[in-house]
Image (cartoon, rainbow, N blue to C red):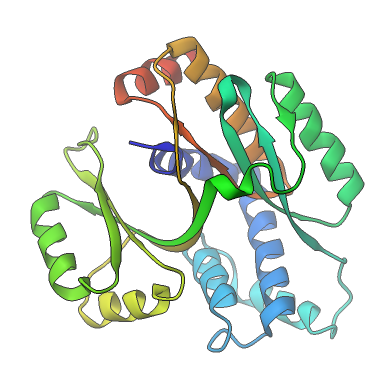
Length: 261
């Protein structure tokens, strides 16, 4: 299982912690603001905004807060100036890192992110040095007891749209995580087909997926990478963090035990 899937699953647990810390709502607010300013305040005409609002609502974000953010995006209420950026870097052991940033202070954010990289023997890189290692794709995630049945159903409905289907190993509850990957252009069509056929999914999002991965089979190295990943994701200005590490499940479990001690 490669970098996106591994860290994507780890993030679900961490996001519950973010909610308790009050960080998640702040990140969702910025995501909504930037999406509305870029593509307009109408979710029906703005896919990025529609996804951001859906994500916010599923996290329990109050509807009145969303309305206020849309007004701010239109300049009808006073709001901060936000910048949407991509930061590129390398973690230890040659692992590529791509960060989606939203900030109101570019200098402060760059300084803080640079220090986090340095703390874990990584470094920020020049623009274009890492981004080419990732491709933006539409990703739908599912949980199922019967991955073969779900995969057959998805193939039947979406054969012309699917670029890849990944079935992850059975989890502690005896269920499987399944990811459907499609192009950005086909993302909305896939979502409509799934919704019309009442096929429920855990999440639907557009993310960066690594083209190639760095295999890490050492527990201590994996723990260091996961600490870096967590530190970057916990930064208020980091909306999403993407990595190209590939850690086997048994090594991942042991490294998480080290981190949680």
